[in-house]
Length: 195
Image 1 (tube, rainbow, N blue to C red):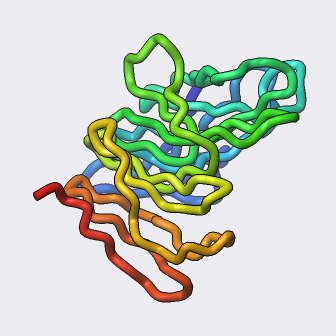
Image 2 (image 1 turned 180 degrees about the horizontal axis):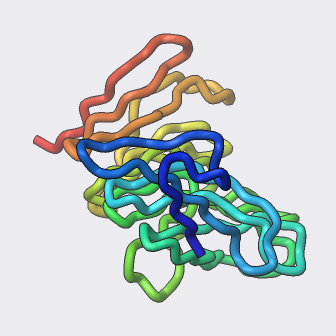
């Protein structure tokens, strides 16, 4: 359940916000039932928040989505079980990008699509980087440490070094398919628009 409070409410002494002429308000998001902690990692334009909570009898974290109305949803894992943990890292346009860690296996990159009941898409092994409002994503795969743009289910490599160590990362992907990040220690922009 979400709890909203007006400015000056003693339950929320840490701050408040103001947007235009709307009254200032704070919202406290709750964990999933049985959870005692968690973290938010990104917020979508509609107010949807993603991250993780530590819900359930196991000690693993689980990818979580908080809707703007305060509804909490644990996102399904690809390999659910007591040895599986997951986290949601980014959200845009209802598409959530995250990863799953299995005790005896590699880290799987997951994509949850809004309204998809079949569970997450597995995009390979590695780490999620960014997602845009059209569902395009950037991932860094392992063990080859390459950056890939997945756009309309087509994979395209983003140029970086071919070393066994990650030298590039993407921190943002615009709806126009332009990726921003770094290559070694240099800020870069990859223009990923289709001709």
